[in-house]
Length: 252
Length: 252
DNA sequence: GAAAACGCTTGATCCAGATCAATCCTGACT
DNA sequence: AGTCAGGATTGATCTGGATCAAGCGTTTTC
View (spheres, rainbow over the protein chains, first blue to last red):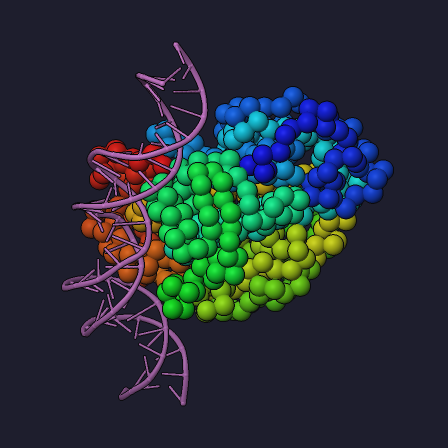
């Protein structure tokens, strides 16, 4: 993902104030002084490799994590070996918020490609946030955002058709890449078709068929993991359930 | 819902420290002094009636709400008149957490039956929480809990069959009634079949058929809105997808 | 207290997407 | 450069639950 950028190991230990994510990540909107304080509690570990876990469901919770480069998926494993993919996390996105309540991880987090991740011990963060109102506010905002996002996903899974789900997924990725300075129309997927299907509540085969269909219709070009979005206008129509099914939409 | 309790208007303006919800609601785990401070910012409005709105999607956000008696549904309306029900809220449950980020409500909230609701102006709450670490901690916990709950719903909608969804819904209600001192096995539904179906991503007809099926199988007794759960053991099996479908479960 | 309106149930039919079943890459390893 | 394994595609078939279509209470309204 992230457009095949070469990871510079020089930049991994960069301080928050010098990090390109400063406007997207936790420090967003903090005064330089406060960023400095936050910086002191952030731990920067060595890069992780494809398949490594940040944590597993049930682990004791002590830190939140932020993706710095690469991508991470979170998922809820079930006893029978199945799982529900809960999210794909790009640079600047916070992971582990669902663990605060029970002080125990509620899902597992696995890196999808070589990734750098910042670790923020929660006790320290909590303490700092009660001294720095803008940090507390930022925490509330980020937790609230996560809830809003999950609610959007509930609508997607509860009401939308397969093609609406995939189109929405691709446009969401596109938007997020764009905000991170990558191309909005040309990117690599770090997750498998299987994982996409799982996330969207669809079978792998359905995802695969939809990619071919979208390509045939000129909405995008897909070659393995490489995606090029060609027609944003029509993709947006697909998300709204317009176009092919002549505007009729069920009330449920 | 809530077992047909008569609402005593005497109790509506009760202070937090005297409220029966003190162990479930925001004040959970706070020192008496701090409960007192919280109490000062809580607004107690007159009871609302079936169909009244606490707020609508897009409204400017200024307060969180807590159900004191009765029940409230939150839902995301869509342009075409449809909606996605996001949750049913029982006494002690916090509403509006998804609005903090954008300072604008992300969903609508409508009361399902005559209900009393406490209003907590968020600016005051935020300020108080930075002075009272245990309140801040409680806020983080409640926000985190909401995320965890939404994630559970994602799994329900993404992976579970219709009967698993309905059984899980009934057991969740049962559990929540129990914690509020009501019967876990005998309760009234304040929402319609339509709303249940919408919440669970199912058609009304499916919900109705499942109720009859569950009753025929002796799992419960249903008469209109009155539900009696008879066999918790087997209901739990249904949730896990066991029993009728001989334990096979797909890996997706 | 009649009637309209709504919510719920039940039956018949249909279809989007799952499942089953090959085959086909493509990259990793020898 | 050949083999192998996991992912991706494509086709054929099946099915859970949606949709369509009546009826049937109950509640609300005037």
